[in-house]
Length: 186
Image 1 (tube, rainbow, N blue to C red):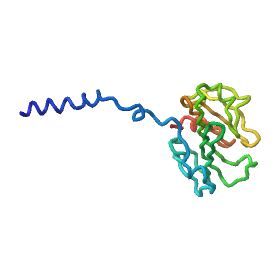
Image 2 (tube, rainbow, N blue to C red):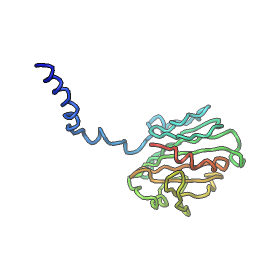
Image 3 (cartoon, one colour):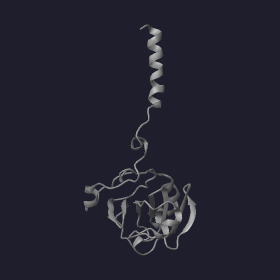
């Protein structure tokens, strides 16, 4: 085989590789970030809190400073999986200066449209009475935090079919909510 034949054979390799079909699971993204069994059993808070990748498969690109601790929130019920992380400071929850950020992913195969969030079967953070607005470049449902959510603003959107993302930012963080939402990547 001469040099010209070798060169021709090597130049055909990328074309041949492109023509070989990969199995669907090799090219598709994971359907939804889910907690490990260890995360489901986890009970102790993190001092100091984890960073931008606290939720496996999720990156919180804009994470404000000043949090003292963090905790995983994960559960499986009613055919859905909830997986999130809450960053917080040491102030009392009723203090208006309390800084808290809760980012959660809800895996629900039936979730495909924004309006379906109003009937999302979650224990905490329902979207009844929420309004649709554009925040951080995303079309989201949003409402004022109340009751167990605390003070601030609650928002959620369908990232892709079957994957819902919710964010609860306490009152001191609401001016930065657009940056927080824009920075979340799965």
